Amino acid sequence: HMNKNQLTDSAMECDILDSLEQLGYDGPLLEEKALLGAAESGLSSPEYVDLCRWLTSTLKPLCDLEESITSGPDDMDSLQVEMSGLLKELHCPYDELVSGVIKGSVRNTKDHLKFVLFLSSELQAAQIVRSRGVSKKHKKNPVCHELLAICQTLNLPEPRGQDAAAVFSQVRDKVGNVLKDLPNEAIENPVLKKSLCSEQWEKLHSINAALCSEYECRRRMLIKRLDVTVQSFGWSDRAKVRVDSMARAYQPLRHSLRPQSTVDMAKLLAAREDLCNVVKTSSGSSRENTACAVNKV
View 1 (cartoon, rainbow, N blue to C red):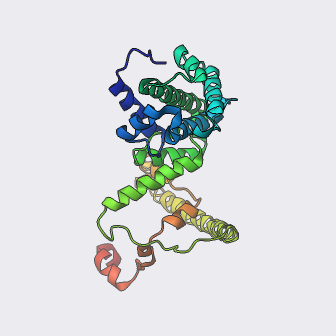
View 2: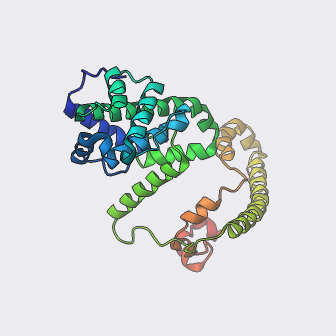
View 3: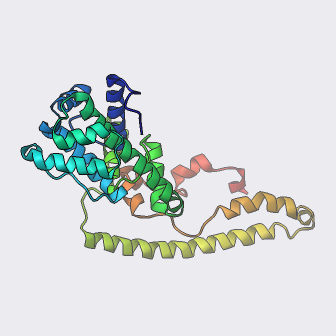
Protein backbone atom coordinates (compact mmCIF):
# COMPACT_ATOMS: atom_id res chain seq x y z
CA HIS A 1 0.00 0.00 0.00
CA MET A 2 1.13 3.56 -0.70
CA ASN A 3 2.02 5.92 2.07
CA LYS A 4 -0.54 8.73 2.10
CA ASN A 5 2.17 11.38 2.16
CA GLN A 6 4.09 10.09 -0.84
CA LEU A 7 1.91 11.51 -3.55
CA THR A 8 0.81 14.97 -4.43
CA ASP A 9 -2.78 15.52 -5.48
CA SER A 10 -1.88 15.74 -9.17
CA ALA A 11 0.21 12.58 -9.04
CA MET A 12 -2.63 10.80 -7.27
CA GLU A 13 -5.07 11.81 -9.99
CA CYS A 14 -2.72 10.54 -12.71
CA ASP A 15 -2.24 7.25 -10.89
CA ILE A 16 -5.98 6.81 -10.51
CA LEU A 17 -6.69 7.55 -14.17
CA ASP A 18 -3.91 5.20 -15.32
CA SER A 19 -5.17 2.46 -13.02
CA LEU A 20 -8.78 2.81 -14.13
CA GLU A 21 -7.78 2.60 -17.78
CA GLN A 22 -5.67 -0.50 -17.16
CA LEU A 23 -8.49 -2.11 -15.19
CA GLY A 24 -10.89 -1.69 -18.10
CA TYR A 25 -13.12 0.98 -16.59
CA ASP A 26 -15.05 2.77 -19.32
CA GLY A 27 -17.30 5.04 -17.26
CA PRO A 28 -17.59 8.84 -17.30
CA LEU A 29 -14.75 9.51 -14.83
CA LEU A 30 -11.83 8.71 -17.13
CA GLU A 31 -11.18 12.42 -17.61
CA GLU A 32 -9.32 14.40 -14.96
CA LYS A 33 -11.88 17.18 -14.75
CA ALA A 34 -14.78 14.76 -14.34
CA LEU A 35 -12.90 12.74 -11.74
CA LEU A 36 -12.06 15.81 -9.67
CA GLY A 37 -15.63 17.06 -9.87
CA ALA A 38 -17.02 13.74 -8.67
CA ALA A 39 -14.39 13.44 -5.92
CA GLU A 40 -15.23 16.93 -4.72
CA SER A 41 -18.85 15.90 -4.17
CA GLY A 42 -17.81 12.51 -2.79
CA LEU A 43 -20.63 10.24 -1.69
CA SER A 44 -23.15 12.82 -2.87
CA SER A 45 -22.04 12.24 -6.47
CA PRO A 46 -23.81 9.34 -8.26
CA GLU A 47 -20.84 9.01 -10.63
CA TYR A 48 -18.40 8.73 -7.74
CA VAL A 49 -20.52 6.10 -6.01
CA ASP A 50 -20.93 4.19 -9.29
CA LEU A 51 -17.14 4.14 -9.72
CA CYS A 52 -16.66 2.80 -6.19
CA ARG A 53 -19.39 0.24 -6.79
CA TRP A 54 -17.74 -0.90 -10.05
CA LEU A 55 -14.36 -1.31 -8.36
CA THR A 56 -15.93 -3.20 -5.48
CA SER A 57 -18.04 -5.51 -7.65
CA THR A 58 -14.98 -6.33 -9.78
CA LEU A 59 -12.88 -6.94 -6.68
CA LYS A 60 -15.51 -9.00 -4.84
CA PRO A 61 -15.12 -12.33 -6.73
CA LEU A 62 -11.33 -12.08 -6.60
CA CYS A 63 -11.13 -11.68 -2.83
CA ASP A 64 -14.37 -13.35 -1.70
CA LEU A 65 -15.47 -10.11 -0.07
CA GLU A 66 -18.47 -10.17 2.22
CA GLU A 67 -19.07 -6.43 2.05
CA SER A 68 -20.41 -4.68 -1.04
CA ILE A 69 -21.86 -1.33 -2.11
CA THR A 70 -25.53 -1.48 -2.97
CA SER A 71 -26.83 1.85 -1.67
CA GLY A 72 -26.65 5.20 -3.40
CA PRO A 73 -26.47 8.89 -2.48
CA ASP A 74 -30.21 8.88 -1.77
CA ASP A 75 -29.59 6.61 1.26
CA MET A 76 -26.50 8.21 2.74
CA ASP A 77 -26.60 6.42 6.09
CA SER A 78 -26.62 2.96 4.51
CA LEU A 79 -23.98 4.00 2.01
CA GLN A 80 -21.65 5.22 4.76
CA VAL A 81 -22.07 1.97 6.69
CA GLU A 82 -21.32 -0.10 3.57
CA MET A 83 -18.26 2.00 2.69
CA SER A 84 -16.89 1.77 6.22
CA GLY A 85 -17.46 -1.99 6.38
CA LEU A 86 -15.72 -2.44 3.04
CA LEU A 87 -12.68 -0.43 4.13
CA LYS A 88 -12.41 -2.40 7.35
CA GLU A 89 -12.66 -5.76 5.56
CA LEU A 90 -9.90 -4.70 3.16
CA HIS A 91 -7.77 -3.47 6.10
CA CYS A 92 -7.47 0.01 4.67
CA PRO A 93 -4.34 1.71 6.10
CA TYR A 94 -6.02 5.13 6.13
CA ASP A 95 -7.49 5.02 9.64
CA GLU A 96 -8.77 8.58 9.48
CA LEU A 97 -10.56 7.82 6.24
CA VAL A 98 -12.29 4.76 7.70
CA SER A 99 -13.51 6.61 10.78
CA GLY A 100 -14.39 9.66 8.70
CA VAL A 101 -16.61 7.67 6.36
CA ILE A 102 -18.68 6.17 9.17
CA LYS A 103 -19.04 9.56 10.86
CA GLY A 104 -19.80 11.35 7.63
CA SER A 105 -16.92 13.75 8.23
CA VAL A 106 -15.06 13.06 4.97
CA ARG A 107 -15.52 16.23 3.00
CA ASN A 108 -12.37 17.05 1.02
CA THR A 109 -11.49 15.91 -2.48
CA LYS A 110 -8.16 14.39 -1.46
CA ASP A 111 -9.72 11.86 0.91
CA HIS A 112 -12.24 10.80 -1.71
CA LEU A 113 -9.42 10.33 -4.21
CA LYS A 114 -7.54 8.26 -1.64
CA PHE A 115 -10.51 5.94 -1.38
CA VAL A 116 -10.63 5.39 -5.15
CA LEU A 117 -6.85 4.95 -5.31
CA PHE A 118 -6.99 2.39 -2.52
CA LEU A 119 -9.76 0.38 -4.19
CA SER A 120 -8.07 0.46 -7.61
CA SER A 121 -4.73 -0.59 -6.06
CA GLU A 122 -6.41 -3.47 -4.24
CA LEU A 123 -8.09 -4.57 -7.47
CA GLN A 124 -4.82 -4.49 -9.40
CA ALA A 125 -3.07 -6.49 -6.67
CA ALA A 126 -5.89 -9.05 -6.59
CA GLN A 127 -5.74 -9.48 -10.36
CA ILE A 128 -1.97 -10.01 -10.24
CA VAL A 129 -2.32 -12.62 -7.50
CA ARG A 130 -5.08 -14.37 -9.42
CA SER A 131 -3.09 -14.32 -12.67
CA ARG A 132 -0.11 -15.93 -10.94
CA GLY A 133 -2.35 -18.66 -9.63
CA VAL A 134 -3.81 -19.48 -13.03
CA SER A 135 -0.74 -18.84 -15.19
CA LYS A 136 0.13 -22.54 -15.23
CA LYS A 137 -3.42 -23.39 -16.27
CA HIS A 138 -3.21 -20.82 -19.06
CA LYS A 139 -0.22 -22.61 -20.54
CA LYS A 140 -2.15 -25.88 -20.66
CA ASN A 141 -5.45 -24.37 -21.74
CA PRO A 142 -5.45 -23.62 -25.49
CA VAL A 143 -8.33 -21.15 -25.14
CA CYS A 144 -6.46 -19.08 -22.56
CA HIS A 145 -3.32 -19.31 -24.66
CA GLU A 146 -5.15 -17.93 -27.70
CA LEU A 147 -6.73 -15.18 -25.61
CA LEU A 148 -3.35 -14.11 -24.28
CA ALA A 149 -1.98 -14.10 -27.83
CA ILE A 150 -4.85 -11.85 -28.94
CA CYS A 151 -4.19 -9.40 -26.11
CA GLN A 152 -0.47 -9.32 -26.89
CA THR A 153 -1.12 -8.72 -30.59
CA LEU A 154 -3.50 -5.85 -29.85
CA ASN A 155 -1.23 -4.39 -27.13
CA LEU A 156 -3.90 -4.94 -24.50
CA PRO A 157 -3.11 -5.71 -20.84
CA GLU A 158 -3.24 -9.36 -19.85
CA PRO A 159 -6.74 -10.42 -18.73
CA ARG A 160 -5.78 -10.77 -15.09
CA GLY A 161 -8.80 -12.06 -13.26
CA GLN A 162 -11.26 -10.36 -15.61
CA ASP A 163 -14.37 -12.16 -16.73
CA ALA A 164 -14.72 -13.21 -20.35
CA ALA A 165 -17.31 -10.56 -21.21
CA ALA A 166 -15.03 -7.72 -20.11
CA VAL A 167 -12.04 -9.11 -22.02
CA PHE A 168 -13.96 -9.63 -25.25
CA SER A 169 -15.48 -6.18 -24.93
CA GLN A 170 -11.98 -4.67 -24.79
CA VAL A 171 -10.87 -6.80 -27.74
CA ARG A 172 -13.89 -5.77 -29.79
CA ASP A 173 -13.35 -2.07 -29.07
CA LYS A 174 -9.64 -2.31 -29.87
CA VAL A 175 -10.25 -4.16 -33.14
CA GLY A 176 -12.87 -1.58 -34.08
CA ASN A 177 -10.37 1.24 -33.54
CA VAL A 178 -7.69 -0.57 -35.55
CA LEU A 179 -10.07 -1.19 -38.46
CA LYS A 180 -10.93 2.51 -38.60
CA ASP A 181 -7.28 3.32 -39.32
CA LEU A 182 -7.08 0.90 -42.26
CA PRO A 183 -7.69 2.08 -45.83
CA ASN A 184 -11.01 1.27 -47.46
CA GLU A 185 -11.42 -2.28 -48.75
CA ALA A 186 -8.27 -3.38 -46.92
CA ILE A 187 -10.30 -6.29 -45.57
CA GLU A 188 -12.78 -8.17 -47.72
CA ASN A 189 -16.34 -8.79 -46.59
CA PRO A 190 -16.86 -11.94 -44.52
CA VAL A 191 -18.13 -15.10 -46.18
CA LEU A 192 -20.55 -15.74 -43.33
CA LYS A 193 -22.87 -12.75 -43.20
CA LYS A 194 -25.79 -14.13 -41.19
CA SER A 195 -26.02 -14.87 -37.50
CA LEU A 196 -26.58 -18.53 -36.69
CA CYS A 197 -28.64 -20.03 -33.90
CA SER A 198 -27.23 -22.61 -31.50
CA GLU A 199 -28.80 -25.48 -33.46
CA GLN A 200 -27.16 -24.30 -36.68
CA TRP A 201 -23.79 -24.00 -34.93
CA GLU A 202 -24.12 -27.58 -33.70
CA LYS A 203 -24.83 -28.75 -37.24
CA LEU A 204 -21.80 -26.84 -38.49
CA HIS A 205 -19.66 -28.51 -35.83
CA SER A 206 -20.93 -31.92 -36.97
CA ILE A 207 -20.25 -31.13 -40.63
CA ASN A 208 -16.78 -29.84 -39.81
CA ALA A 209 -16.02 -32.95 -37.74
CA ALA A 210 -17.02 -35.20 -40.65
CA LEU A 211 -14.94 -33.20 -43.13
CA CYS A 212 -11.96 -33.16 -40.78
CA SER A 213 -12.16 -36.93 -40.40
CA GLU A 214 -12.15 -37.41 -44.17
CA TYR A 215 -9.38 -34.84 -44.57
CA GLU A 216 -7.25 -36.63 -41.98
CA CYS A 217 -7.69 -39.94 -43.79
CA ARG A 218 -6.58 -38.43 -47.09
CA ARG A 219 -3.71 -36.56 -45.51
CA ARG A 220 -2.41 -39.70 -43.80
CA MET A 221 -2.43 -41.44 -47.17
CA LEU A 222 -0.50 -38.60 -48.82
CA ILE A 223 2.04 -38.47 -46.00
CA LYS A 224 2.53 -42.23 -46.28
CA ARG A 225 3.12 -41.89 -50.02
CA LEU A 226 5.64 -39.16 -49.29
CA ASP A 227 7.49 -41.38 -46.81
CA VAL A 228 7.64 -44.25 -49.30
CA THR A 229 8.83 -41.97 -52.10
CA VAL A 230 11.60 -40.44 -50.00
CA GLN A 231 12.56 -43.89 -48.74
CA SER A 232 12.91 -45.13 -52.32
CA PHE A 233 15.54 -42.46 -52.98
CA GLY A 234 17.85 -44.30 -50.60
CA TRP A 235 17.75 -47.63 -52.40
CA SER A 236 20.53 -46.88 -54.87
CA ASP A 237 24.15 -47.61 -54.00
CA ARG A 238 25.11 -43.96 -54.32
CA ALA A 239 22.35 -42.87 -51.94
CA LYS A 240 23.07 -45.50 -49.29
CA VAL A 241 26.21 -43.66 -48.19
CA ARG A 242 24.17 -40.48 -47.73
CA VAL A 243 21.27 -41.90 -45.75
CA ASP A 244 22.19 -39.91 -42.64
CA SER A 245 22.42 -36.57 -44.44
CA MET A 246 19.13 -37.28 -46.22
CA ALA A 247 17.47 -38.05 -42.91
CA ARG A 248 18.80 -34.85 -41.33
CA ALA A 249 17.34 -32.82 -44.17
CA TYR A 250 14.02 -34.65 -44.39
CA GLN A 251 13.04 -35.51 -40.81
CA PRO A 252 12.54 -31.93 -39.51
CA LEU A 253 10.24 -31.20 -42.44
CA ARG A 254 8.46 -34.51 -42.01
CA HIS A 255 7.77 -33.95 -38.32
CA SER A 256 6.14 -30.62 -39.10
CA LEU A 257 3.44 -32.39 -41.12
CA ARG A 258 0.35 -33.24 -39.11
CA PRO A 259 -2.52 -35.35 -40.39
CA GLN A 260 -5.10 -33.54 -38.27
CA SER A 261 -7.02 -30.65 -39.76
CA THR A 262 -6.63 -27.18 -38.27
CA VAL A 263 -9.88 -25.86 -39.74
CA ASP A 264 -12.37 -24.91 -37.04
CA MET A 265 -15.24 -22.49 -36.44
CA ALA A 266 -12.79 -19.63 -35.91
CA LYS A 267 -11.48 -20.10 -39.45
CA LEU A 268 -15.04 -19.98 -40.74
CA LEU A 269 -15.72 -16.71 -38.96
CA ALA A 270 -12.43 -15.26 -40.22
CA ALA A 271 -12.98 -16.36 -43.84
CA ARG A 272 -13.37 -13.53 -46.36
CA GLU A 273 -14.99 -13.39 -49.78
CA ASP A 274 -11.65 -13.61 -51.57
CA LEU A 275 -11.42 -17.19 -50.28
CA CYS A 276 -14.13 -18.07 -52.80
CA ASN A 277 -11.87 -17.09 -55.71
CA VAL A 278 -10.29 -20.52 -56.17
CA VAL A 279 -8.13 -21.26 -59.20
CA LYS A 280 -6.96 -24.80 -59.89
CA THR A 281 -3.19 -25.14 -59.81
CA SER A 282 -3.42 -27.49 -62.79
CA SER A 283 -5.35 -25.06 -64.97
CA GLY A 284 -3.80 -23.82 -68.20
CA SER A 285 -3.45 -20.23 -67.02
CA SER A 286 -1.68 -21.33 -63.84
CA ARG A 287 0.62 -23.79 -65.59
CA GLU A 288 1.90 -21.07 -67.90
CA ASN A 289 3.69 -19.51 -64.93
CA THR A 290 4.72 -22.73 -63.17
CA ALA A 291 5.89 -24.93 -66.04
CA CYS A 292 9.56 -25.89 -66.04
CA ALA A 293 11.96 -28.16 -67.90
CA VAL A 294 11.07 -31.13 -65.69
CA ASN A 295 7.47 -31.02 -66.92
CA LYS A 296 8.63 -31.44 -70.51
CA VAL A 297 10.60 -34.62 -69.93
